[in-house]
Image 1 (cartoon, rainbow over the protein chains, first blue to last red):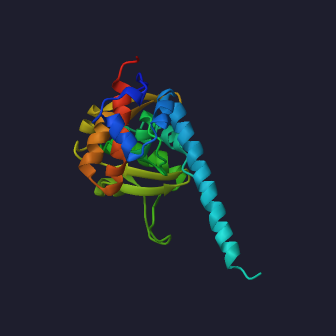
Image 2: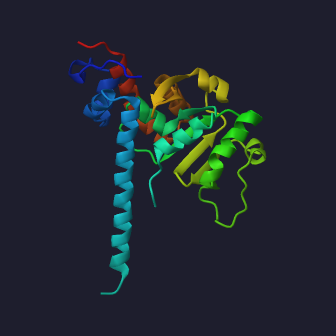
Image 3: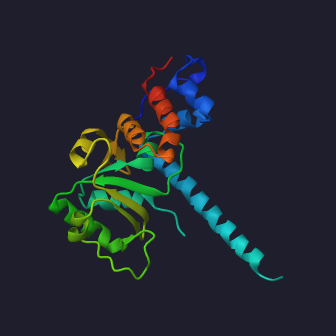
Amino acid sequence: MDGKTQSPENAPPDDPITRAMEYGVDITLLTSNLRLTPTERIHRAQRALDSVVAFQTEVRAWRQRQKQPA
Amino acid sequence: MSATNFQQLITCLSEADVEYVLIGGLAAIAHGSAYVTYDVDVCYERSHANVERLCRALAPLHPALRGAPHDLPFRFDARTVLAGLNFTLDTDLGALDLLGEVTPFGPFVPVAAHSEIAELFGLRVRVLSLEALIRAKQAAGRRKDLLILPELEALLALRNRPLS
């Protein structure tokens, strides 16, 4: 699953990498992930999810505080 | 609300010898996707023996139907699972989706034929291949599935190109 990678700078037009870049995909994130093992990729995703959930929790708490009278 | 624990859920299933294939967002992440996913999706094998193993593995995690009223009676056992097909669950370790089939492949056997073995957390885990993930997303055709396709296709292209 850990394939070899190449920089996308020289990708020909009408290439999946070019299409992805035009779509807004951050190719640097993908090349960074491809240097990791599958386990490391999932650990990274877990940290990202933990951060998102913690942030959502904080936003909900803030909104609740906004509703309370001063 | 706590985040789904990917490692513990996968470990729970694998150590109980449940036959399954990791699919969906976490499979995409295992291949290198940068998307965030909130749950673990698996295609499970539906023999009585494997469903028994699945239910025994998940019982300590108190599985409940996600989004259902708390007082809705629900018993997660082999009879329930075999009477249904797909289950979206909340567990003590987070969100787990069980699918008996994956379009366009079908049930577990053809899905497993389109999977590869990855070493995750020291365990050998079947993960739907990147090519098959792309086909599954195309077949599902939902907006959220189509949104991720450019990234998956770029991953496949990046992975398959030789180093310069």
